[in-house]
Image (cartoon, rainbow, N blue to C red; front, side):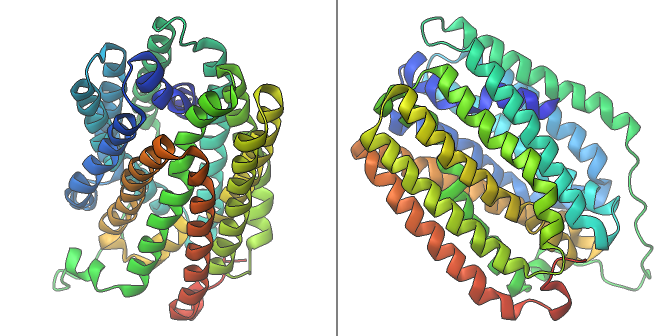
Length: 386
């Protein structure tokens, strides 16, 4: 339900800022990036909070902040209003992912974590896909009030999630010897393999997920795609993830985790080339077809990351420091979502078609980095558990 709310609002944020409120594409990209900046600043202390009070309470606070942040969006009139709303939502998002991931990892046996994180990806993408389809039917720049509906529904779903947490237990941590040092962020930073995985994820997000945020405004302004067409494009992407994620997760069992990430980047690079072709050569319905094929490929790539990234971070993290590890991992997403829209927004404003080949090259470079990191992983963690 919460992902459904995100799906209603998420694909239309840049369109709302640019086409409804009249902010430039560059400014709109920076506003979206403000959410990532807030996450980078507040992520580390939130990791400490998760380790001290647990994932469930931290997650409840995160959901309230997200409800407030997205609930402010209908009243945005100036760029600084949007920065404020995005910052509040960014702090909530910074707390959401490490707390939810810590909670999920603590409730799941190590050998089945990849399945649990894959299932998390399924429910999230199915909700976002259905939300995007409904949002495309509601939103129209001819009636700015239609966007108010999107953001209010999104805010309400965060509050519904808070109520559902009453039915979720807090995992019982293994008791440690009182004489054993608990550790802190210095211990996290000494784990070079983990930092390498987090660094690669920055590139994955910058060149991959963050550019999805810019695809709707590119499709609308460069290829004449309607809001309904954009909703359909996002729906197809998320349906692919919902349908293919669990079979792909099963397929990856007993196989190399880093090679799975490399395969993801190849699929993403191909998808961005198709976006380039769609924007350069097609319009309206034909462009929708090309963009739909591109996001279907992108969704298949996501399925390779779903069982790998979160489970690998959880496996590398000592239980007593899991909140901090998850916070740093979340920071890698935030940094990518800061860099991606900011860089992509200005490239899109200067030369729209140049963005997609550049993103494809960055994806391939990250895939090569993933392959080079494999030999540094502990041998017992190189393969997805079977």
